[in-house]
Image (cartoon, rainbow, N blue to C red):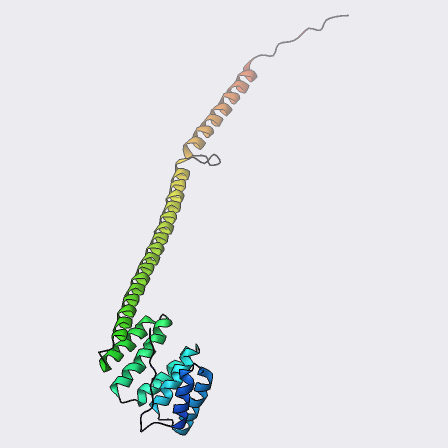
Length: 222
């Protein structure tokens, strides 16, 4: 991943930009940042000042701030070659942040403005490959999660069905077994008939005893 630095042309060449470029070549990024910011204070429509400020911010690890400056430079710049370099660096930031979809879009825009840049074409191909790889991995993860969720649902449904079947079976068994505390109508009638027969037999015996003559018993003398 390679970034580009723009130099001021005759129309946009200012003292702050020239000074900032010298500091940038010496890797004095913080000082260069100050010069480019001063250049923007003088002329906020300077695409080169915004771009080079973005570059110094990127070299300091301030990717989010750098991206904002590149976006502003892209809105102001009309030169296709410079536009290509702006979008290339935007792609580098996005690629480093693993935002491969954004990186692909930036590199594609860079190639539209300048299709001769081989390093841009390489980064574009690499980001596109990583994007598809991540998408396939995410699709597989989503599919696995769906399958796991369905398996869990099926397992719960099966357990619920087994529980319901067991309850139904217990209810059927309870219906088949007689209640020891409950007397059937037939048993009650049988016991009543037996009791009535016993009563009749008893009365007959009493009646027979009453009909027989009483026997006198002798008392023995002393």
